[in-house]
Length: 84
Image (cartoon, rainbow, N blue to C red):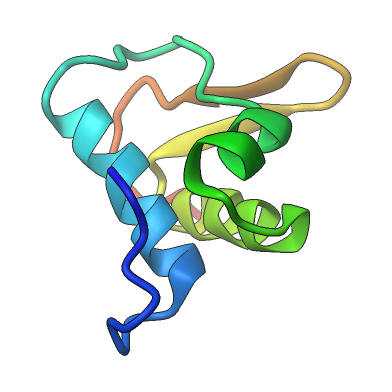
């Protein structure tokens, strides 16, 4: 998926949606790593901060979890926001 720079939707949300769709389709399963920030930068032709914001959005929505020094992985129960 390419980001649509003419779409009024912020680019980080478009990147997050692309990864969310990969999770929903089963391409990425629970505990699978999601693409790294570097991979997102090259795949979607976005800035690193944009990739970082996309991951933060997915994390806040419960789609992914980030483990320090290990990476970001699909949540065991994707789409369930973390309890605070």
